Image (tube, rainbow, N blue to C red):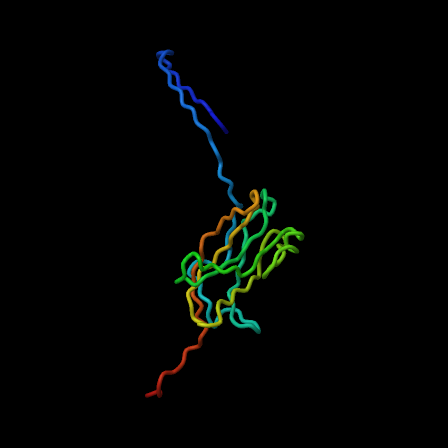
Length: 171
């Protein structure tokens, strides 16, 4: 909105007035997105689910709108907690549109039923025991690029190495 004008007039004296002129420009935003699980301060250990690849942390993404204007995809990202914000790694991209899915590269899946569930986060193979940050990021098209919005970060630890005895046992 350009050149809006507000005029304030006194109830007591109509000759006392003030005008203000301004313009309003809205910044585009991407749709909301949340990590439903895990909760913050999660732990992946030897009691966590396991498959042929190894122990994993179940992850679910929700609270997004595939009908949001310009919606393109959602990414599940992780990084070591000790890394800077430049260290985020895309684990998988999730698409609602089959044409966008076909044009995409890398790890990708289609969104089914408005939720993204049954994701398995294994963490890095080496070093094995690490603290991680997880987040989901929505991407919407705007002009020739993207705008994005990240979920709150969920931090936790991967501790899947079984305890070992040090030295000889003594009575």
